[in-house]
Length: 242
Image (cartoon, rainbow, N blue to C red):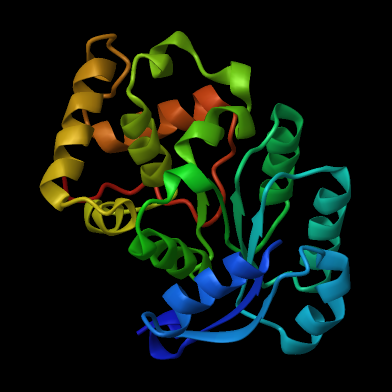
């Protein structure tokens, strides 16, 4: 049993409005295994810094209307102060420059991180699934932000031929997710995961870009090369059951 499963996740929440603070208290405090250390409506990470360092939460959940340079610097400083703390960042909107900077923040981090737009979260169990994944040191990025965050123009015509969901599945496969963990993270069943993977393989094989020995490994290698990502020590390229 993992640490995140054997005890409650210690969560510190920062929002900009009191009504949002009440919302997060309502959906997190009573429905999920979370130790809600504090919910602040200050909207100011610099003000909360001392408490965050003192309490050492597992996850810092931040909900902002938008990012700016000052907030990005504060986020970087907080991650330096608490390098093993995961961050879940939920935004109402995000400009191109901020998204690219966030990509650099994620690559430099040892802990888990998630970045999502408000409009992408329609169910409370999605939020809990994201928090749980970040507590397991995973990185999850809103599909609508991923291409810009991971390099934008590096996506080739080949990967543009895949659907948004297929790229999302392929990205998680590259992080070592099994079909079962993909289904759990994306809130779909395993049969649907297999369907997405099968369609993806068919599209890639049509261009003779998949190796004949193991399609999963070939697809992951192709994705990592195309997006300019390096395979980290935690990324598994061993075949998983399809």
